Amino acid sequence: MNLKYKYSLFAILALAVGPILAQSADESLRYLALGDSYTIGESVPEARRWPVQLAAALTARGVPVASPRIIATTGWRTDNLKQGIQAAQLQDEYDLVSLLIGVNNQYQGKPVDQYAAEYEELLAMAIGLAGGRKERVFVVSIPDYGYTPFGRSRREEISRALDEFNSINRRITEAHGVAYINITDLSRRGLDDPELVASDGLHPSGKQYALWVERMLKQLKLL
Figure 1: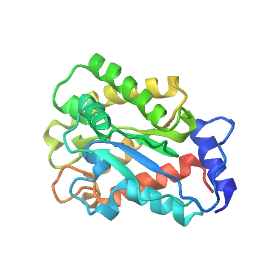
Figure 2: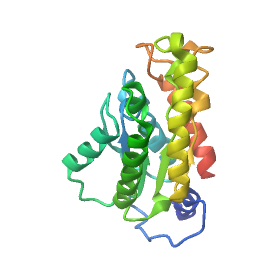
Figure 3: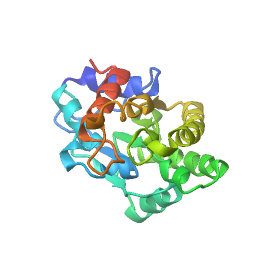
């Protein structure tokens, strides 16, 4: 394994230079993905889920990543994800942890202040699962389902609401010094390019998730 790529991964995730824990060159990075239907890849094959695509892309670029451990279920809100993490009784320390959560808080009409408090708690849990190393954690913005056949009739309303939720999670993420990857603009291509939407008319397709991964790789500056 080319260690400079692994060091770059951790350093850029933190957006700052910091100490990096040594790891055996023949070990793969352990990746934990936390979220909801977007992270579990509702309506796409397992290989097209974005965490799986990201792990494969990193491995192809000389940063071996094991098959991601995914804790996510369609329909989960922030409180459900917290319960799911606790139920999993995770004992391992992960080399990379991602967090994407909030669309179901918005869809189910939960208060934004409740989301803010629970999201910040989840971010702290993610950092803890990365051994307290913020440079091992990154957050992905909530995609906009208003740009799908399912949400098209309420597009403006949905987009306004999700902009508010994303402004909250971005503010909290950056205040904690964690990398934030905005993919919402990519999801807003869904009505112009139907191939970016899964067959259910609601969730992203594998093609859209590939665009997310391209954005992640560019923002993480691995090459």
